[in-house]
Length: 116
Length: 115
Image (cartoon, rainbow over all chains, first blue to last red; front, side, top):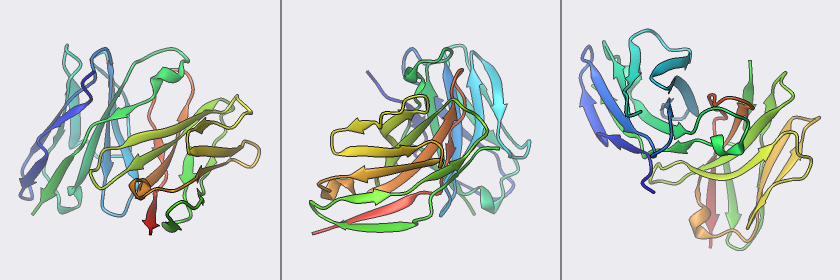
């Protein structure tokens, strides 16, 4: 079974530009989560998509947005980049619904975004 | 709001020895999951162990076990017979039971394993 994949591995942008990060979930998973891991900090929840809809959003400004496609892959867009947006962006996927412990999240390798 | 606290930024253990990583959390929910994730230098987050809050029995996965104290809201990870490959960042995380939902993470503990 293929794991969660993310692209690109590294992304370098200048302040004010836009960045687009992509994520493909594990086959059969309908939920996709985005987390930001800034240097020295833990993972901060950004966005959760399920069945094509945004289900929950973390405490981030509106210039962080995304979408989920019919094949359950997802894009994270960051507009008007700021220096503090430099971080590792991790995507995770899970099955959705129910009480089962199978709802555990599986993570991708991340995209390292550097804003100069 | 739920919070997860890891008070040990760094820990060190000798190979073959045992180490315990601490985690406390705050929640008003009665039913939830707790997790320990490992993040090696490759950056890939790997699930180490999972504990359901409604289960009193502590979870165990090979050399990894937890000490779950629900009343104290404490969830520590014990690594026995430490190996060089255990060196990584370890994150404690929390999620409410039910529908899929976000994970709330602690700030992590960097574990060094020495010869």
